Length: 187
Image (cartoon, rainbow, N blue to C red; front, side, top):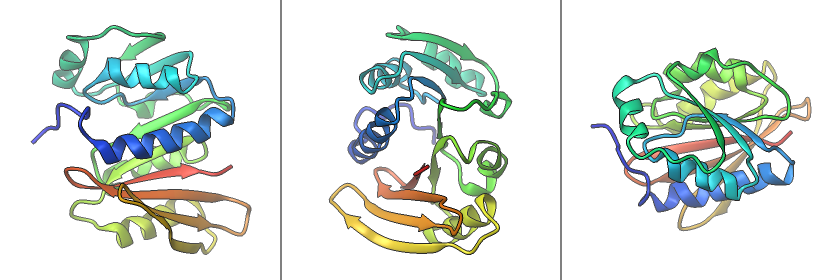
């Protein structure tokens, strides 16, 4: 079943707020991402987080029609009917890869955008441990140091992955309607 509304996904919103706040502190003001079903709400949130320009991708025609029904962009926005994989990679751009799929299907995207992207994955059917192992293999050949449960709140569990090359990621594990994982680069 396709989720057509994230407006009541409290835990997702808490995690988005934390992750985007960190990216705002880095001075990123251009966004390339997947907006999800509530595109105008998503862009309004992005604007609050300092984003001035957005490029939004949608590869599913039915989702695109649904998104465009109530499209009132509060910032300069280009919408592309394509897979986000076709997006160019730039420095100083925030990539928001908010997938509804598991890591099995997002691997090429993670390889391409691993240094610039917030990545949200479904854990359904794969699980946290397998997703974590696969993610570590995709982003680095080095052995990770994983610190679990750095912070536990009502909304999420926070974990950190460190590699020897000063590369690290913060992970937010949460569940609204299904188990999800948001991964944020710390460099």
